[in-house]
Image (tube, rainbow, N blue to C red):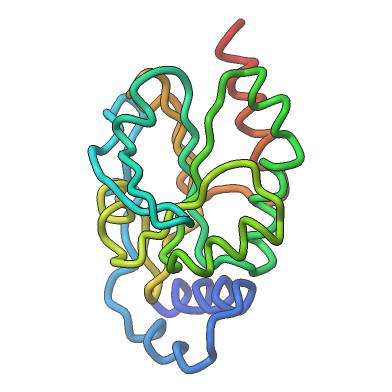
Amino acid sequence: MSFVVGINALAVLEEEGAPASHADEVLHAESFGDASEKLAVGASIPDVTCNDQDGKAVSLAKEGAKGYLLVYFYPKAKTGGCTKQGCSLRDNWSELQKAGVNVLGVSTDDEKLQKEFKEEQKFPFRLLADKEKKAVTEAFGVKNMIGMAGRSAFLFKDGKCVYADHKGHTGDQAQVILAFLAGAKK
């Protein structure tokens, strides 16, 4: 079974542009994380702080204390799937704003790369640089594959998790969140 997991992880790494030199590490990794370790619906937003793309400290607990906050994780800035995921949110920004959703994107990239990614893609939301690979990534229990956060998304309302997507979406991330909100309001 671990070999199958390794092959799946390699496919993700190839999609996300990771160097081939990491293949051996993937195949020999003992643990890729477990969904049971991930933040669950009903949990409080972790009280962690991380720098955004401009080097400004962002407290997730403060950001998510009132209203809706979507915290989405992606493995690597400026790669195919991660760009699709962010662009889905950008392209549906007005609908997300009408629904009262604030958005924070998180990866283990540094501030410089996050800033480039945000500017190139014209993202209207902030990107957090969890470059220590622990402040946010560990607090949310997001699978860390060879130094990269696993794709996932968590929606909070007034500080409590109301939706957890442990696999994340790429091109339809915004639509999934908006559909959840539409169903929750019925």
